[in-house]
Amino acid sequence: MLNLFKSRPIISDEDTAFQLATFKWLLKHFGGDDFYKDAQLVLPTKEYFPSKVESETEAATETFDAVKKYAGMEAWPCC
Image (cartoon, rainbow, N blue to C red; front, side, top):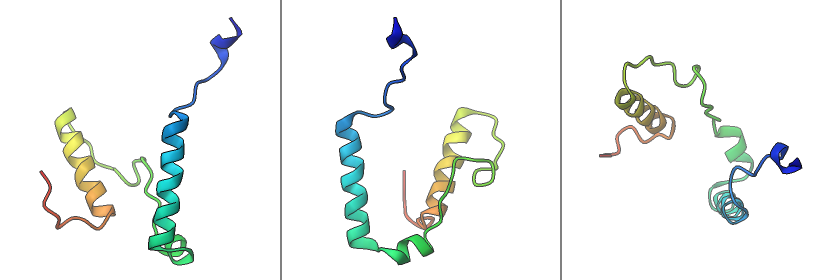
């Protein structure tokens, strides 16, 4: 009964370890201080994703295009 109020982790221990290893690799190969100074943290808020859409398809397309823009990948061909 007491387990009813305990929250479960969002991701598994294996996925957490993978995320940490990936982040360590990123820092090793793509920066230290310069990464922190130059990188922009993009949050899932209306400030970064302000569009108003009429359907799930429009939402997916607009979100994908915005993420490409923030990642500097606007010119990359994606299907």
